[in-house]
Image (tube, rainbow, N blue to C red; front, side, top):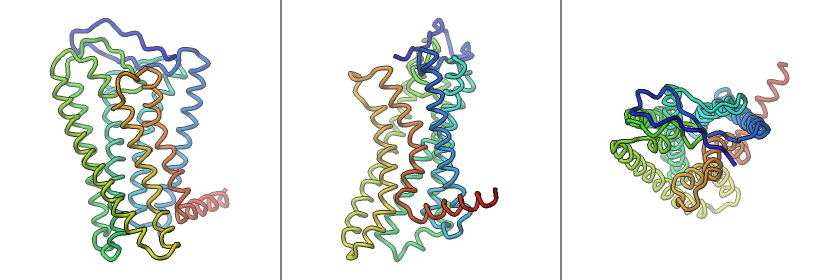
Length: 320
């Protein structure tokens, strides 16, 4: 059973808060060290996998295509996401602490929302890439030229930045007077809203609703695109052609499903089944696991990427 950090006495406003107390991953020293080792292993897997994808795409000139360009951006978002939350959790587990400074909490929340939003928008753009590639192959070079790809990637990053800036500024402008203990192992908007003592939090709920509508719009676009994609794939006469089309679509669909299912269940599950242990497990599942699994999912089905990573690894061993 995870222990909840002891809250400081109720405070009159957020200006008197100098630090927040994060939820401890475990309440015994042995489990804390075990969690540290698990997080270290997942982090190294994410760094290695995403680092290999970035290096392979950057160094392999034959991979300079829209699909791999967006995959490189996704790998950068995954690296940023896991580097935002995991190092602090590892530090707290290793040194048996639970505190994070007020500024550190604000920075962690901003970067977490930023990289999470970037990943979702990039997955939506990647869905459009697959849709054009399979359903409109004759227009692929026109609709997804190098300039168009750069603009779409920039739009994804810029939208995520503005969204994160808006939520962070609004969340930390709220007066907080219900202590400083957060029921999560990293700084998260819903946990900070629980500390608010003003109806101003309704403004943040409104912003969350707007972001939710945007996320729902992206989700509907992904669903609609994949309905069209699968219809087009099933009309391909040759089995080899269908296999090649599926090999480029299924990894993306698996990543989207993993990302959306874990995040949606973590935030939309009914209160009746909520518990500190389940909330913690789900938060790890949607914030820590996907960045480590995404490179594996993509490399398993994509022969070009597997070959590029193999050449990169062979070249590195020859040099050393």
